[in-house]
Structures are given as structure tokens and as C-alpha cells.
Image 1 (cartoon, rainbow, N blue to C red):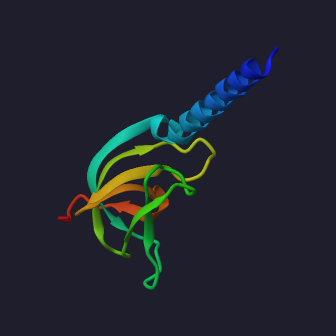
Image 2 (image 1 turned 180 degrees about the horizontal axis):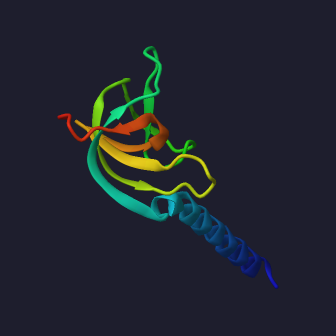
Length: 113
């Protein structure tokens, strides 16, 4: 095997590693889930704190916004947590749209958003 073939093999392997990492990164959004389509209130967050809104349903995902305690949001859908923790829900409030941990949401069918 000459130097050109070695470089080509290394580049191909690097491409496979990158593609695998990308597939792993988006995998949580493809997990089994359920539709909610209902309003909810942010609960369980201290008055001095905020609930982080994430790009993907994972605590290591990039933060895209934050919600104050007791605000109301629209819950589109949730995904089942595979590790036994709380589910993650896709929420919307104004221009904020992303995933939050469901343990900080309480459904509130009688409230306007």
C-alpha cells in the first residue's frame, strides 16, 4: 500500500467516524414518543432560576432559550426517556422553541398561553 492509498483510507475512516457521530447526535430526537398538543406550566423551578430550553432532547445539547418559573408553554410532543429518567418534551412559547425536561412541566388544559 503506497502513501496515497494510506491517505485515502484515513480520510474514508475519518468520514465514517464523523457520519457516525452525526447519527448519534440526532438519534435522541428519533426516539419513541407521544403527541401531547396541550398547554403546560413550568413548575419545580426555583423563583430565582430558569428552565433551559435545548436544541435536542438531551442535557448536553446546546441551550437555545430559557423559561421563567410558572410561565405557560405549548407542549407539542414528548419522547420516552430510555435511561429511566424523565421524558423530554418539545415546547413553544413565543419565539422560543425547543426541548425541556418533562419533570418541570405540569399540564394545564384550562389556561391560555
